Image (cartoon, rainbow, N blue to C red):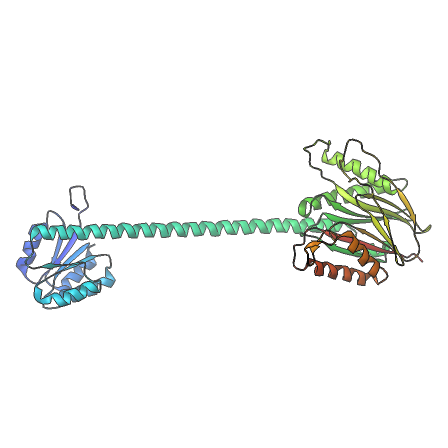
Length: 417
């Protein structure tokens, strides 16, 4: 049963133009429901506007409007209200049509029986409750979904702001990194005939170049730090600062001694002990000291070579097979190689990003042999043209593949007359 002492009191509206029927209905059900009665459709509309009515029962035949007409009026205004109509058999066609259009929950035949009508009203109230619960559930789900969407939007906004802050910080780190490397104007004064192809994988790079001069000698380095992006950039900043300090304090300039001291400073700064589970942070480097007056250069390398091109000959000056950083217990000094050069020779210092780029038809690395052949092809061209060709060849080879590593190539024309 719907009605009990603990149940809410439901409001029922009964409309009938016969006074005796209204009195009889109210006296019969006044203990079960809160009863409202009206003798006309207009009165019924006023009651509907004033009270929260759950069930409407109306007689079909009334002077001002029929029961069906009344129910059709309240459908858009009170769609949740359960609608029932009382009728005789002569009105059945109109009632069936109204039921089929969804305007009426149930019809009741005259004369009505108390027990049957009570069951019908309770059934209507159960449906009303189910509809209300369903509506509340839908509203709750809708509200929960809206709250979730708001939270997602807020989290997205926070994430985007965090990403923006991180990106701003990375751009700032990039500006610091570039500020530590010689600007192009100063570099032109020291190395008037050079080009730099610098293609970081990210905003900041783990590759860097460093150029200085002392005692009429040029000291030039290209390095590849562990990792790329921000970690590599921080390592590069350390490397640049250490190189400046080492060369400024040095009494004599020897390429291998610079690398030896740089390694010592880096190991000490990173607190490296050589334990097996320790991160192998460090850098690879190609460093040369050019003596223009005597047409000689020194070279020392940590896992990096230097290429010297003279006419159609490519000379590989190899570096040592160890990094700048902790390597093994039997640490040995870097070697120093002295090489004579001629006017207009080209030297290339570079990191491994160019040759390690995956691409081509077979999706393989560019490889050192292809890089050497390309340099032999272009080394006699103007420096800007060499740089342009190297950039274009990289893009053609990559052909939409991921840019997998930082790329840095420093080409220098050894011309001092």
